[in-house]
Image 1 (cartoon, rainbow, N blue to C red):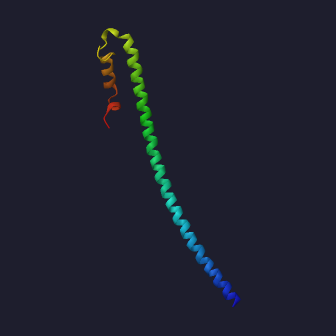
Image 2 (image 1 turned 45 degrees about the horizontal axis):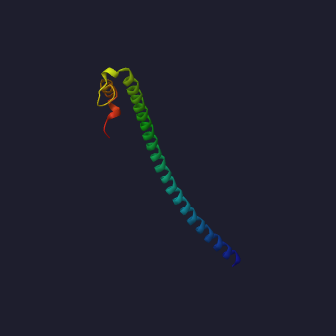
Image 3 (image 1 turned 120 degrees about the vertical axis):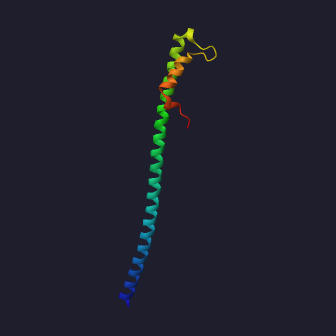
Length: 102
């Protein structure tokens, strides 16, 4: 009887551990899915950040060019805009991808 009770206890323990193992495996699967989703979102955000940084750099270059051309071309300055509009138009034509509407 004692051996039978011990065997029953071990059988119950095995069943309990198998249930616990299934719960842990399910939690691991959900966590892995969440990690993959976050990794994908991070990749998208990194790409967007790189694109925005490139746009900012280009816009800063344009502003720098406008500021340097504005002082040198005071005679050709558009009185309404306060800078050389021809040079500004050239910048737009040279980088059309920077000024596409999203």
